[in-house]
Image (cartoon, rainbow, N blue to C red; front, side):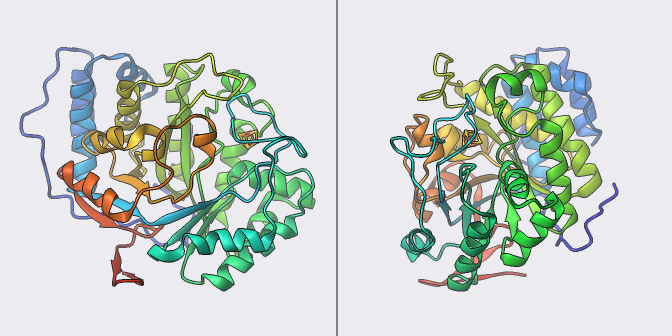
Length: 394
Ligand code: SF4
């Protein structure tokens, strides 16, 4: 596969010698047998095969296959990190129907952090020696691009060893427009200020039909993918998400995965795939039901099977609950995200999970699932800790 990123370090993949599947592949769904042959032979799955996986009820067979791939890539290791979320503003010019976080300027609950406040917020979560700040927010109509560059520069000065994972493709495209810069120049300036990588949010579902319903105020699917390509081109890795469990169908989900896979073939710049369960509370779509545990698990497993060129699949515990994330470690996931400390976006949408989790709790969840916990930094390098500091293996 061509990889146009010369400057990015390779993703770490651990020893693949572990295999916990104790029996051979079994299913009572005949449609899964040819798919299993391809997975076991290391062949890529097609669009139709992806749809078949979604339509099959044999979750144990699908999970067996996803677990096989996950252990082929990562052995028994499961990753977590110690991070903190910072959401500098919830003021947003868009009004996505999927969103419970964004507020119009000067309305109840709207906030924008002064730079000093944002830096203090970062410092308040620092006692556990955080290795990553995850920074995303709304599309503020008045904040200049310089505010975001100063925010990043100030964080880098104060916390030089912390990885700054900042700004979704949607925010990058919006800030480029406000600054009257090309997207590539915007990304270069962000990188110069201290952005180390980009999170994967705002991808939602790429299909236009769905986007018109859930988020017609933000960039379309092609623009999201093009922005990701440019980020990878300038040497910034990113994650990639899919928001599922609203008005999309199986074809929309597979289309989304295949479009991500195509960009990854060209750039190699996606680090982790993160399926995000839709939380309807306090959104314009709150009449929709919440996702089920079965759909959450399927999402992880099918993502692992379709995205053969992604190193990591994350079961984001804040979105799918610690209980489901723990099970997902046997269904294709190799990562459960981090301590987070204070999560706003999904809690505004009714998430009932804790706002953060201590490092020891994450380790317990992983161990209980029979996996070997490895604390990672954002680039999946193992982190070694002493009492209040850390070193990263390079
Ligand atoms: S999803 Fe993002 S862009 Fe859309 S309204 Fe919410 S904060 Fe704004």
